[in-house]
Image (cartoon, rainbow, N blue to C red; front, side, top):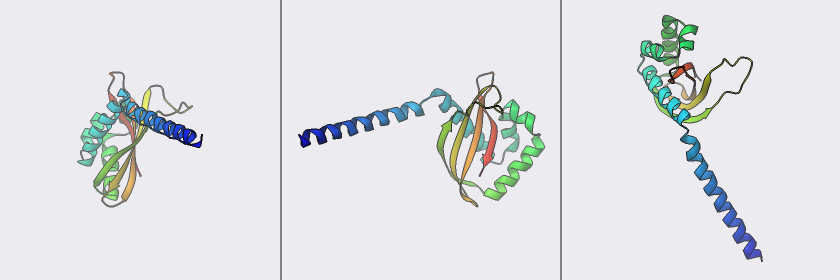
Length: 145
C-alpha cells in the first residue's frame, strides 16, 4: 500500500510540474507582453547608444509632455555616466499596474530588467510601457537603479 501511495505522489508531482511548465510559456507568449517587451528593448537600445533625441521622439506622448527634450537628454546623459555602459540585460518580469487613484486611464505594463552596468554592477531598469491610441506600445517611464 505504501508503494501505491508513493507512486501516486510521484505521479502527482510529475503532473504538477508539467502543468507549471506548460503554463510558463503560455504566460510568456502573451501578445501584449511580447509587443511591449519588443518596443521596450528597441527603445532602450537607443538609450544604450546615447541617442537621447531618438528615445525622446519614440517615447509616449505622456513622456514627452512631462519633460523637455533638452532636460531628458541631460538626465539620460548623467544617468549613463553614473551607471556606465550596459554589459548585460535580462528581462525579469512584466506586470500590469494595479488600479489606483494616481493611475491614469489607459493600458500600461511595467517591465523590469536585471541589468549589469559597467560602473554600477548589478542593477535594474524599470520601464512603464503605455499602449497609445494607435495600438503602439511606447515608453512612458524609465528608471535605472
